[in-house]
Amino acid sequence: QVQLVESGGGLVQAGGSLRLSCVPSGNTFRLNAIGWYRQAPGKQRELVASIGSGLRTDYAESVKGRFTIFRDNAKNTVYLQMNSLKPEDTGVYYCNAKIATMIGRDDYWGQGTQVTVSS
Image (cartoon, rainbow, N blue to C red; front, top):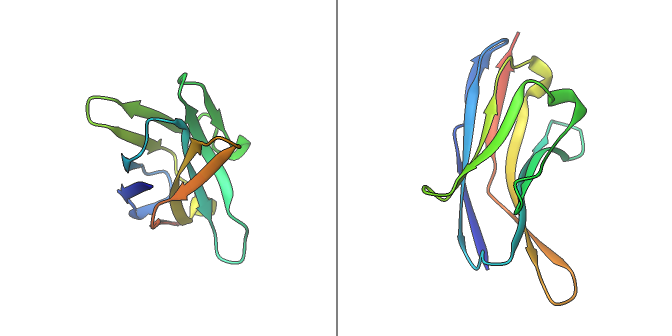
């Protein structure tokens, strides 16, 4: 089992910044990738950014150049730095961990943290 604890959401004006944190614990030795997804009201959950075990990063087109995902191994924390926030970035942000198994991968999710960007 893997547990993910998120923090850092909140209310910010357009153009502002927020930093989200995700701390994984439990059986993380087969961690393939960890990332952030978001879900806006009435929309499907979508990938925002992810970072693999080899530090490869992937971003949604809508956040490229504004968001940065990085990890601090000393603190066992993955961060999502969000700059130049827009109202369309509003949603619940979920940390996700992909763990390798004998037959594929398992997904684990955090509880979610609300990000609200006002215009």
